[in-house]
Image (cartoon, rainbow, N blue to C red; front, top):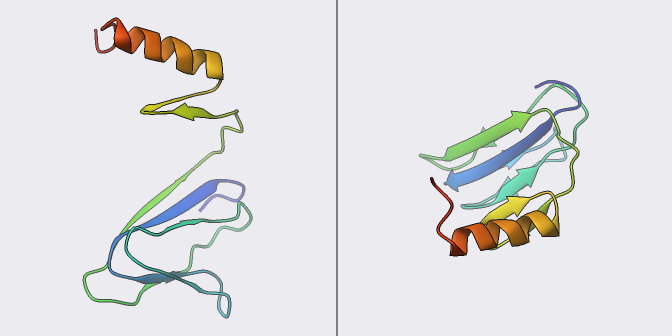
Length: 93
């Protein structure tokens, strides 16, 4: 991992532990761990057969987040505009 980047671990199925030695957290199916931005090592271990994980990491955007329904934008006004565009059939064109 890149120091200062975001990292999320999502357990699609099975079980896993995430975290530094002695500080592990057990994650079950559909559980999510949002890791601290410090460090460059991800310590994860499957604790059940056929465990499937989704690991996402990237540079943080540090932008505001507004979410409502299926839309995620930066402001409430952008959400309102997206809803209007959707209702008018303007999305996907």
